[in-house]
Image 1 (spheres, rainbow, N blue to C red):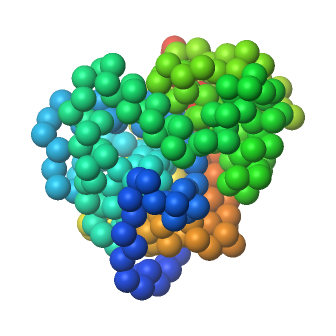
Image 2: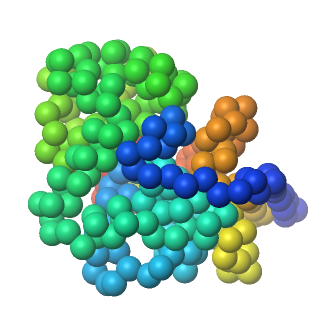
Length: 277
């Protein structure tokens, strides 16, 4: 069998200068792009950080054991909420992350609620007004220019976060079950929970774990080769260029979808996992 090896590498110039971002700064709100990977992976990672003293920065070594797509999703969320610095600043831990990590369980949920209300003010207002699912989806398009699968996943992430934080959720929004497969459907029908594959998830290759290089996803092809997407750009710089942002997000979605489908088709699993929002 012939082996096919493909490398897809994307480089962007470093952002000129450093942009100081504060939680209450309006520029941060304007540059925010909502996460759309698994909320449970994000919240579980926060809990893991709480088991040990925080390091000065969250470099690649802090994500050992996570798949390439999980690493990229975690960094996207942590940087988007201003919890760590962007790539060019070596992902330094910010005070907001320290506050969440050292808090007890109840206080941590309250701080999560503060983040949600700060970064999703329109969506929280729609929920408080007993808005509908379509109103929620439209707000993600209007506020964040999200469409299709990315919008649906981002809205599902938001609902999981609202529920975890104990915030009031509109009775007309889909009900999110802890650890379940509920998701915002949009024009799609709800999917059943996927079986968890027994094969190991594709990992970022060890020889590419150079701190500060950027995020990457390596996906194993069924033909035996690999395809790697490497993104060498900070979240803040990328969020300010709509064309580049949508291009990179489309590539991430395509690789993640291929990874999930190929893993599921190779070996049937035993037990269930949370559906990716």
